[in-house]
Image (cartoon, rainbow, N blue to C red; front, side):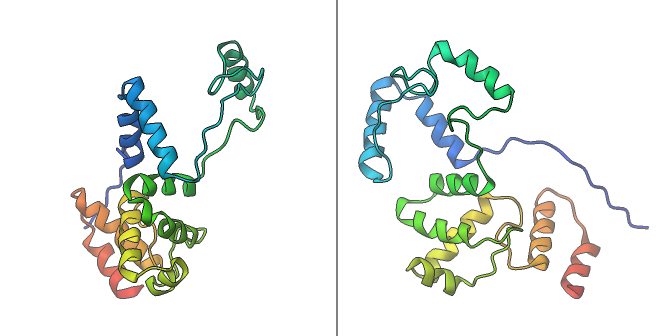
Length: 190
């Protein structure tokens, strides 16, 4: 008699974005200002704007101390404070992780790849199609897709349900959980 055991556990994943943020938080003020200036120079999508409190308009980055308590109370009431509360999506998180772990020249490819995922996280387009869309080679697309698979949820960017299930099984096997009958069923019958 074969039995299968399924357990859930919570674990913290150290993502490239978290590593980058940790590095920034440990910088002294002068080094942080230099890092910000360097990012402004290298990334044309960024611009240096004077920060203003969304409630009172005082010149600060984020919320001023007087308005912070008000903002917390408004957030707890699920109110949108002048568009300052933005929900992040899975796509935003995937792109942030990819941007933090890829060279800048690969960011456009990452956008095409993540933008090509369907509502279930499957990647239906071939590497050749993605290369054509992003104006690059299939090899560079393959590197970005592999990085997405490494960083994203298990099975992300699989071609179909069979590939997704096999990726799930491989992740379980990496943790020491084997399911030989499940693998056989998927490989032979899907």
